[in-house]
Length: 221
Image (cartoon, rainbow, N blue to C red; front, side, top):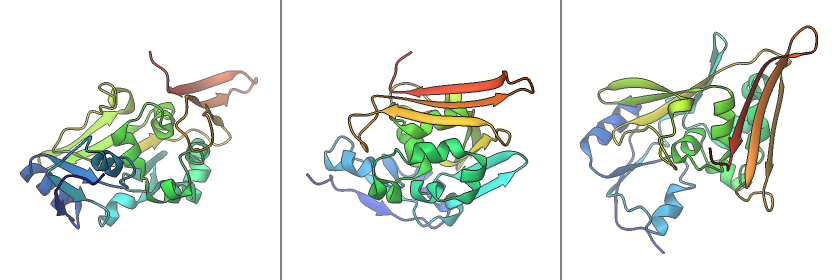
């Protein structure tokens, strides 16, 4: 199938994108398009306007500041997987990224797109939950932050208003030498996981656990 007719917009800055979101009714953000375009082709969603944010370079930055890693919403999953900074400071994410779809998927898919789509089987929401991340949102009215624990408002429903744009995610870094693992069970590699688990742990001087975090995918409360 083909998507319903829509108007295409390609802003060159965050400010321009926010202006469009404030001005237009029934608009969707196009990031990697791995989920949105399929939904549009099947006409599960039929937005009147599509706002392509792929030209906004500031959304693709990865930086570290004061023990916090900040990842732009438009960072490609493959670029995150190849990032030496993420590999050194948040290796749990590297393990999870290797399990997302296939190479072609990761070449287009974005970090922010996965969090905005919020599929319960997705790997990245679990990674950011384990890291107790914070999501940074912007609109023409201003900025706000949302703790990852408050991001989900229901099934595939993030705390993201129609006029807001997810611009970045920040996560507090665990100390060097911490333990980490991401494991999942799927029918085959690249399929949606039936269940998955992200885990972080640090030990005290006596070999006991001083801190631990676990986040699950594909399960209900």
